[in-house]
Image (cartoon, rainbow, N blue to C red):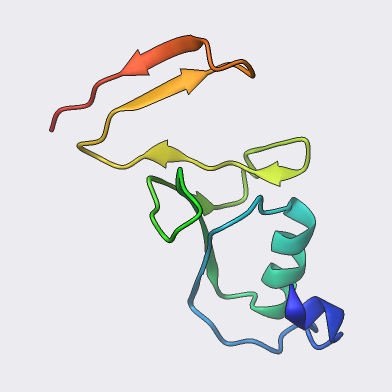
Length: 100
């Protein structure tokens, strides 16, 4: 993150109420720095299946710190979307069809 590299992400400096992150894995370390810089904000981690700005899931960071290997959860799939879970060689592990 640019603000970290420039060393301007300091405790209490930001007054944001909500911040959306998307595009790459969001580390817990970054979220913790962000929450110190903007202590009254809400952090939402979005995830999308392509390299364009299309999001299909979201996760609102709260105190439960849902993560895996230091990366914030990508959350739940949006309503009215189907999704597939595949393994590392793209073998289908689970297909979920959502209808609302």
